[in-house]
Length: 140
Image 1 (spheres, rainbow, N blue to C red):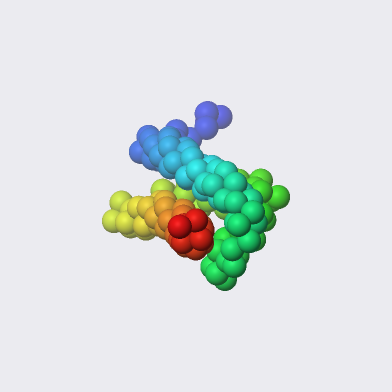
Image 2: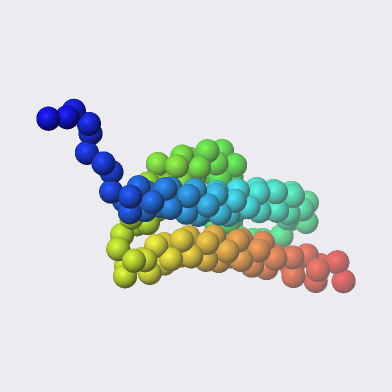
C-alpha cells in the first residue's frame, strides 16, 4: 500500500484556477468602480457645496442628501473597500464555482454592481446640478 495522496481531479483544479482568475478580474472591475464612485462623490460634491454656500442657494432635499452621503463617504471610504474584500470577492468566487448552467447568476451579480455604481454616480450628478439652475438664474 502506497502513501501517495489521491490525485486531484484535473477538471476541479482547472475550474479552481479559472474561478480564481475570473474572480480577480471581476473584483478589480468592482474595485475600480468603487474608487470612481468615491472620487466622484467627494471631488465633485465638495467644491460645488462651497459654491452653493457662497451663493446662499436653498438646496433641494435630494441635493442635501447627496452632500450628507458624500460627507460620510469622505469620512468612511475605507468601509466600502473592506466590504468589497470581505463580501464581494468571496461571493464572486462562490458564484464562479457554480455549474455552467447557473453562470447567469455570476453575470447578474457582476453587472448589477457596476450598473448600481453608474446609476449612483448619475444620481449624484443629477442632484448636484439641480441647484446650479438657481445659481444660473441668480446670475442673469
